[in-house]
Image (cartoon, rainbow, N blue to C red; front, side, top):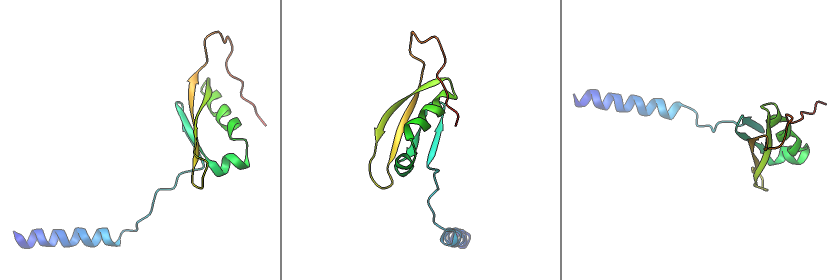
Length: 96
């Protein structure tokens, strides 16, 4: 029984040591119907605010910006909220 446990432990250790260690890649713009994030580098190159507004408008919502992490590897986060009361039209989505 000890030999089987030792063999399983050695096999599991060998498999884990041969597997490559890598972090998951995240796209520069990622979101869903509740909000999303924009990479800070992308937000500097293009209009990050307009990206978020268009993204939320595709769900019939408006964008609310939450935070900006202004450093290398940072991000701009936003939430998609329902259209405020008193607004009788859906948000506009600009197409270029």
